[in-house]
Image 1 (tube, one colour):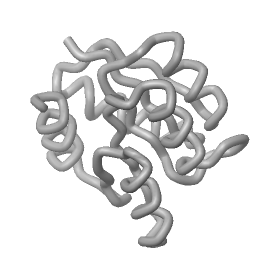
Image 2 (tube, helix red, strand yellow):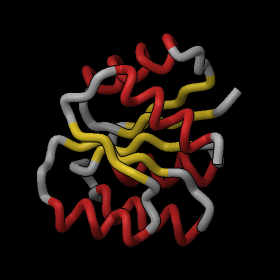
Image 3 (cartoon, helix red, strand yellow):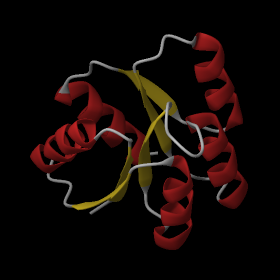
Length: 120
């Protein structure tokens, strides 16, 4: 089973994402609440996938993407964002993020995105 990090500064969003992942039968789930912690956890755990909020304290999503990709060029990163800042989203995709999902999201979109990416 895939190991997944949920990186979001919102306790509520992390809980919702964890519930969605559990419905999808993903059980090896870790959480982080800021960008710096997300990078450190990624390096320590080397997960199969990270669900990453774009707006995070300490280090923003773009910085996290760049640092994780520098560490692991094959990292699978799905951005989860409420932002409609297409420039920043595109910068993240250009820097190595695999895809993005806009908030509010539904569980089918999340599970399909994860399944598709892990199948690659």
